[in-house]
Amino acid sequence: MNARTLPYSRGHAAGRTGPQHAVSEDQTRILDGSHPGVAVQGRGCIYMVCDGVSSAPRGREAAALMCARIDSFYDRFHQPAADSIVQIVSEADWELREWGRGQAACTLSLLWLAFGQAVVMHVGDSQVYRVRHGEVTRITETHKTGRSLGAYVGMGPKVADVMHVWRDTLFEGDLFLMVTDGVTEVIPADLLLDSWWATQGSPQRAANAIIQEVILRGGTDDATALVVDVLGVETDLDFDPGRTFGPRSSISNPPSGRGRF
Image 1 (spheres, rainbow, N blue to C red):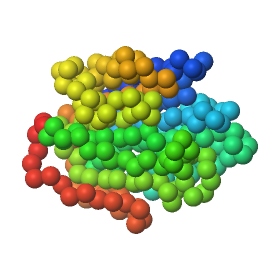
Image 2 (cartoon, one colour; image 1 turned 60 degrees about the vertical axis):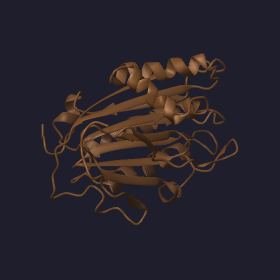
Image 3 (cartoon, one colour; image 1 turned 180 degrees about the vertical axis):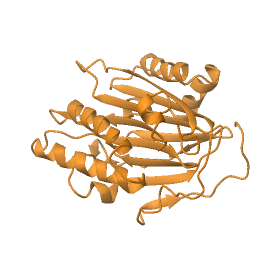
Image 4 (tube, rainbow, N blue to C red; image 1 turned 90 degrees about the vertical axis):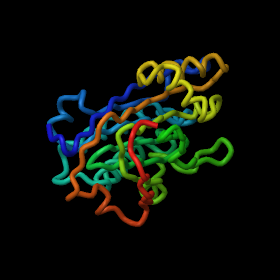
């Protein structure tokens, strides 16, 4: 394991199938130190949530394909960079379009933790929040007008242009909440954080608590929550994971201090 580039983070996902659906359209992927193939690569950790577009006949398959394709990040590229992930997304988009027009589409929310930075890539309406010093910040935008998605994997070559990319310095104590619209439609962001406090800092219990709250509030859509807790950070100051990335990146200023909330 390359300790310089693999942060000590732990993530857990929980989900439920909406009462109007036979199976959930949501898919998740966790690639961190708990995965032996990831640990030896020293390319950081990836956490991912995809929501299949229900109006597409193969939406669930689209989400599963996108989650499966991200594994190639760890063995295909000479040097890991944000552009490598964009390439994988674009290739998955091409595959989905080969299935036929309107047949397959999904949202994408991806968190990459490596080299002392957090990188988020987002298309669609599954949201990512960061919690630092007790404050919740929504990282992602919503590519949605009314009930229609304006951007999704499977839309065509422009997916790389409309993808929202965010990156910032990673600190010990950072917490990330990744949720599909089945969660955000019924639970406001501050209550997502309440689930974390109530479970005494357990990603597994917090993710489960969020889903239970969705059920209690009568949520009707598929709902998925992935909670990522950053327990330690090592950096490689000679490498910038966004250095080859174009002007779509936005870089936030680092905070003035470290520590848990």
